[in-house]
Image (cartoon, rainbow, N blue to C red; front, side, top):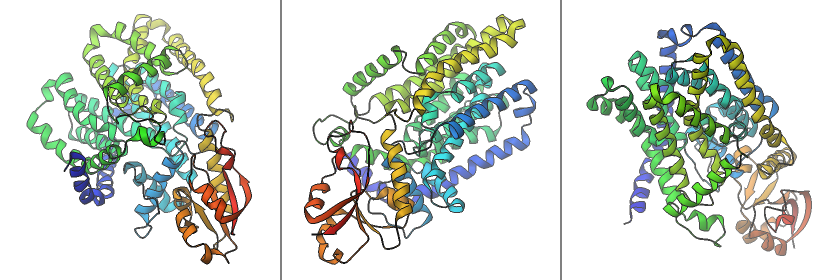
Length: 520
């Protein structure tokens, strides 16, 4: 039995624990936040009023960009709907989808909480993600304030992510990266709060937030390594191996079922082979991937066609001006950011939209870059009222080009998901209770409605029974869908809604559409 087969065997027995464990983890996070809000008055009262106003304005900027200005739609296409479908499975144990593809539990669990009172709607997921994206600036401010011992450092970190174009882009879809960053930042902010206040609530908040981040995106499991390293390296007086183990084992245990699920999912398929339809093969994790992906990302940053180029520049200057007094913090966040960067670069070369994972590294680089503003304000104290707004305006100006590009309807980054979001909404609105939709992957339809769906093979095997059905349709939207030709030979097809998803995606994109079908 191979290691993957052994883990798959264990995973089958721990699968049912993922949702209850997510519920326990989130409950502890919420309890700790309220306990700290009630007991630790320094969280707000220790911050001068002008910086409270500055943080409030920064949140408004982040909120307006993500909730008001940017359009909301699917990003990774079916991945978004797998999250929604999983949330529906949590709410309804009797719901058994045809394609029960399950991702990490954290985001679907949060969506199930929102779907319960608000109902199943894809825009609930998109706007909820946007709000989490905007809220991230608050714990990021607290984290940077504590790492730099400077309110202006906190404002800089919060503002950089408020106007971060890539973070904004991934805040308006149904994927889980942005939500995971929210809990990652809370974990780190609470860790540095623990260094200052030495209270149990802070260390529990740090560890359980790390656990929920790891249950939302498995990459954040490395926080369980860096939290004890941070205590030992940055505040050794608080380090006790026995106590660390005592407080860590529960949050780690709560995240393990999701870790097993993701390892089995990621390693049981050759994703390069799968993504290229058999044209190219390659290992899921390898040094060859690392070299190739590192080279591609370095070229992207060096070209200047990335907001991360500015963040890297800020970090480099931050190292220079902050090394003398803050070398340990710089080394800690440099190591954490580098670990995220290398870990993601080790994965298969065809990983879609890899740059979204480098947002984790951007968080770490921004925290190093905050020493720039602290240095400038300390050196030119009399000119603080000029230095701070000027630097923030320059950052906003640099981001403007990327935001304009992102919201351009012709921009092809999320073109496929944007068009399919509208199409699914129209198809569901026009369908009746008698509608049957034949579709290769029914996850989006089943996630958002109770419309009856049928897989192409089932439809082909039951042509005679479908002969009298007047409300029969076929949806072709998946690049390379092999069912199209067989459906065309067995059924008369009348196009109801052409789907213009971009010719550049696939040579067979002219087939994409929603068809009325009748057995021949």
